[in-house]
Length: 89
Image (cartoon, rainbow, N blue to C red; front, side):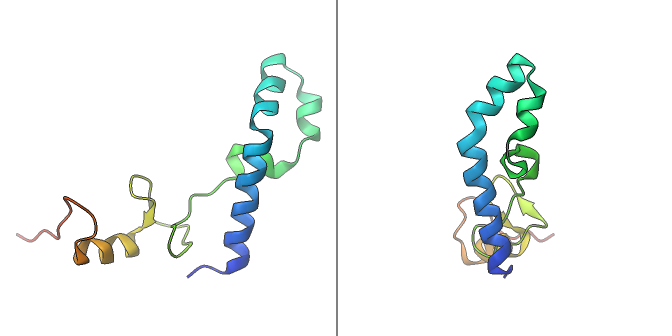
């Protein structure tokens, strides 16, 4: 489980990104980079990090399922993900 402060920080960045998304697009389209510099840093898309929705883990994140590899494996073994089963040969 990731520290709660890291999860909260990421949530704050997502809120800022959503708030300034339209304004950023307009400034980029107009080429007004000085005004773009005045916006908060965390409102940029590149500052966002994908995290597991259950544990908050940032590494080994599966975008399609929204979880980390560890949670994915547990869910697959319990049969909670349709169409996924452990293979063996």
